[in-house]
Amino acid sequence: MTTAITDARTLRGTSTVTARIAVQHAHGAEDLALCLQVRIAVFVDEQGFPLAIENDELDATCHHILAYVPKPSAVTATLALSGSPEPALAPSAATAPVTPAIAPASPPDNASFEQAPASSQATETDRQRPQIKQPVGTLRMFECAPGVGKIGRVAVLPSHRSLGVGRLLMDAAHQVAADELGWHKAVVHSQHDKAGFYAKLGYTSPDPTVYMEEDYPHITMELALTRAKTKTDTAL
Image (cartoon, rainbow, N blue to C red):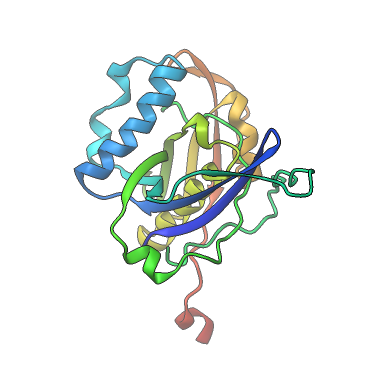
């Protein structure tokens, strides 16, 4: 996939915070270092998981998805001129995922997220301009069984939660898994208190058993993946 760029908005007090968010299938040591930067901030510094288990042997073979703010674009706050702040975007499982315009047992998601609106301002110039990446979210995935991808290490920095970054990461992971890797199902070992986030994305739990993983309650959830239709498919 090529990089998807979208504008995300959320309500912070009396201000509306807007951020230009890019999501990509990460490649190379530099991108992996940015992914680890986010994971350490969330899982080690914030949630208290041991640093020794965060960067494991799976990282070298996993597919990583990276969300970042392309610099010099920055998060900006603008006061609502009417005196009434814009309403926060409401989460909805039925909301259509952001399709990259084409724009991985582990501690998984760390927050509940809202859907971000598709950007109408991401131009070809935006994509071609040299950029510095400010990482804000990440996940990784690997094939745990034939055609089945396990998604984990889903993390978003506190500064960028409620901007829909979690959904953007998952949407990108589903697209890469189905369209590029040919996987037909995704599974997650969700922290029990974060299961609602995955449920909004269509994940279900065939076995509702709650188990301990890394001293934290988890539940297994899964989602059937569908390959995006191409022009060739449509013509058949």
